[in-house]
Length: 311
Image (cartoon, rainbow, N blue to C red; front, side):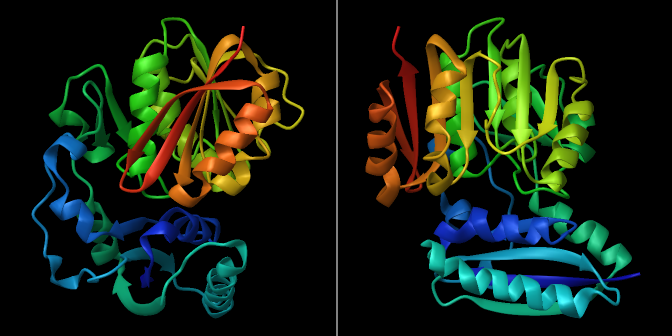
């Protein structure tokens, strides 16, 4: 069996959006090569980076690699992916001078190629992200096991780290948590391991739903995390103590009112995935809905805002 390894070089700010396009097209494994991750200060990373060959990294921006099974649908799928990425600039996604390269790899090469990009990473003071094939190496009860092969979200992106730090700070034992845009399920799993009584997780993308369910089950949390395919919180009436949403700012603005309606008084709304240019927009939307902004954090030019529903 043969696979196509495609490499898209683009601006760092386009990472999550381009990766999501690839996953929605059916990619079997998405990895990101970002030179900043190699040189990142230890206090920001909380752990150690693997020694890797940085000569293949772009001097500016990032490489996003993805793997697709080669069949008769590949030429049409390739065209669709390229056109979709090209059109992202119309939605304000900065692509830079993006480029596309591809090569054919065989089954055995593909199976091992993308795994070498993932190692055990400590992402907060108490939580560690552990690839499923390294689960035997840890015994920590707050270790989060994931298989990053299908949906974007390995737990080490800046937006996820900021969300994890916020959950670690604000969650209380037996809280009810809503995770909007569940992705690979990292935040839902973390919420449970931090003491949540139950987590309700929502995502529109069926690939993300499948990945989140798989990772939930890897962590033995079938009874504590309910995952549903749904569009944000539209028509959801399920009050919680915390709502966490690691999604793009242009989508967050449509979530604010429903977040207010689904939080208990005094509950926290953790919003991430915000680029600096959109920070003020999100703050204004939150304040218009009567939220009190209580914290703003920044990592690698990504913003996380924590707001509280006034009592």
